[in-house]
Each structure stands twice: as C-alpha cells, then as structure tokens.
Image (tube, rainbow, N blue to C red; front, side):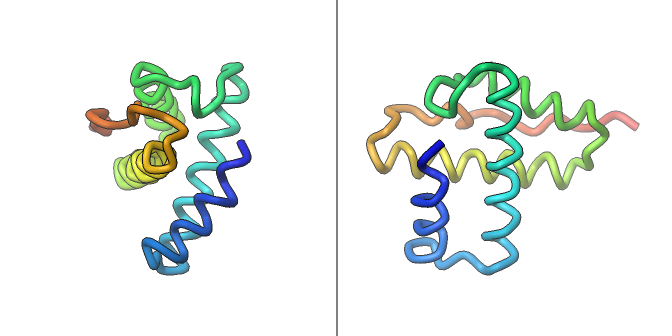
Length: 103
C-alpha cells in the first residue's frame, strides 16, 4: 500500500490530528494492511464483508470494545481519504458497526 505515507501526511496537514491519534490510526491501518495481505487482498479490493470479517477477527483476538471501535474509526478515516483522492468510489467501512464483545 503506497497510500500510507499520503494518508499520514493528510492526517497531519488536513486533519491536524494529534500525535496520539496519528500514531494510533497509523498503527491500526498497518495492522489492517497486514491482515489484508494474509487474506491476499489489498485495501482497494476489500469490500464491506472483508471489513466486517476484520472487525470480528479483532474481537476474536480478545481486543477491547474500545480498541475495536477505534480501529474501525481508523479504517473509516483511511477509506474516506482513499475516496477523497478518487482511488476508490465507495468506503467499504461505511455502515460497519463494531461488534459488542460478549463477556
């Protein structure tokens, strides 16, 4: 994914993201990119069902609801960036809700 550097620049300059948000979002997107790679997918190929599977994957790994929710927010932001750059026409993370973790 060549878009990560551009996305980082976008977060810094256009979104004026705090350092904490910047590091969290970039870490989330790198983890998502790694998962996609393991699924033989790219961010451009992923659809809503793939995003939902990733959210379930995070929950299944025991990640907290807060972590899963933030990760989903990171993905929505990243995909909004790709749509704004006309790399994608739709945001596959749009409409995906973080699953509630059963205790």
